[in-house]
Length: 191
Image 1: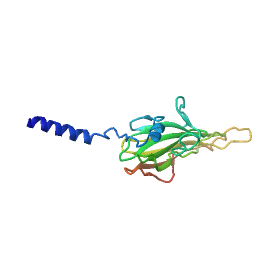
Image 2: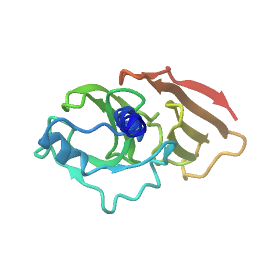
Image 3: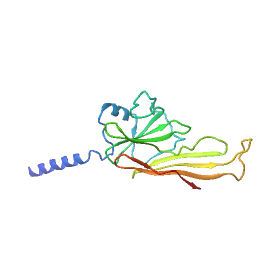
């Protein structure tokens, strides 16, 4: 009998301490739960290449659906695990290249923090090439960058030799366990 009581106590202890081992917090209301169903749960690390993302199968939020949780002209992307008592999703904002937006919520759906996790300098022009990248690593650190080649062009839209510059513009940051998102200012580094 003593062994059975010990075993039941141990099972109860393990069950109580394993509620959030996955890092995914349960939403506290049905409307917020319905919103989260549009975001596929994924483990960290997660990476986004804004100019190469495929939106097939993602939900577009148009401002009439779930407007208390997200902005219009955003696509659902991923829900990531949390390192605290919050829920975190990444949506893709529509632009020349998709721009990742990280939003953290209390379990009741109240927004804690929201940040664009991109540099946003990519576009199309003569002599201008750019690749956008964002990652959130397993330790909840954030890195986002635009790797750029910029050249001057003449009136015929031809690159002027010797005018090209290769550089990266990036930001670093992290998600704190209270759901607040920290990001550095932009840093430019020649390549």
